[in-house]
Length: 634
Image (tube, rainbow, N blue to C red):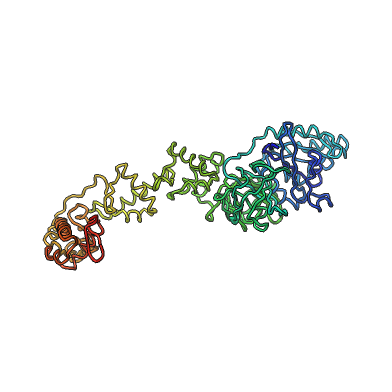
């Protein structure tokens, strides 16, 4: 059996004949519950399918029409591709006709037709009046030009024409993508003896085969696909657009429920806050107030929460706003998912729109950077490459791995890697970190370089006599993580802005400091002291105290005229070189360092010798070997 990956949904007021019509079209009774059959009232979702002329099968989801079961209705609307709006000729347009049509519009459905039912129960004149009533309702909606088919589900009048039109529409409807990561909002869960847990739903993306390992979110419970059924038969795979039943092992009935999502592992995490664009219905009785309590319908989930308006104090009917929805229970979403929002008290549909992000933080209203970032995300929802670029830009100076980027845009790793490569070709993304495993947005790189330039400028302004700056101090001043700072300074060095020096220092290319007689005099003092140098505190008199002496000593180090061997020990470069040569000669001749012999040759004491030897250890000249020192590498 071949399946056309398209699902048809019904919509309409209670008792307008939706289930009767489905039964007449398909021969399948969508009312599966005992209570539904006894009361003649659809309570929960029903499922059927019909055959196209070429033999392919198309699924149908029949939704309840009663106002009390709107939650079930919206859950059933998830994953449908086209709608049959059902209106009874004896009633005409009713409240749930309007609400169901609005919900379908909010969910982004763009194709469908109208079945005008129960024409056998009224005179022909009333059928014409009902049709005019329906046409007035459809004005300005996605069904404005949709055909209206008068039918009788009981007598069969008009069913052949309706079935032919529905088949043609289903065959022409664009199918959902079956590549990429799998995601199926759960509509129904049950246990079957001998099989275990079965979950039904309409996958909205990707495909899953027998043997695949999947993940239930929220919770992260792993399970394996034991079997797949679609339209009453065992099938090789569940794919986007197939109304499917998955038999899952390692999963109990209590681990999953309607509202959960079954997906490829590693891409989805339940979020308690989501940012979105909401569009209000034009016929609302009053404006939407900030922090109103709502019920969010997305996928098959319907948690309650509050809506925080981000660019408006309140929203008038028909208005549109960016918002953050803070939920009482988490949901699993992806950027671009459609949603419906209903007020909790009194209950009615407010509007809906698209999810923009899973928020990590509470967003504050009227913050321009928040609004700019969300607007950029919104404008890129339909273009994966641009959506990824927007995500990278919003990470600022935090490097992004391929795995993290893939989870953010809900695309598989191979596709994400390809998108990153294309962004690199457009000069919008840059490889960062060791082995190029992480990425930054190109604009972020430039802003990071500007941040470092500012930190370097300030540091040298505070140390005007210095030629070299410690990289650690520059990084702290710039407020950057070590890996990002290292990457950016390497770029700056390649561009010729700075020179990276041994010992963790940075110099500005072309920077020079004029000769200073005071510094020359200090250097002469160090030369005279040899390996018994005075401390900065002792040198401070006449130099502005210890701080002034340290500044001049550091300047001598920058110029290569002195060496800082410890916090308070500065030695003239000539004396240091002579001492290093003496250590090398001593170790070479004796096989290891003989301290008394060295101390006598250098005419110094333990006070200065120990920091000198520790400095030689740290700089790779010598190393400890048991109780002795030897030359490194020998």
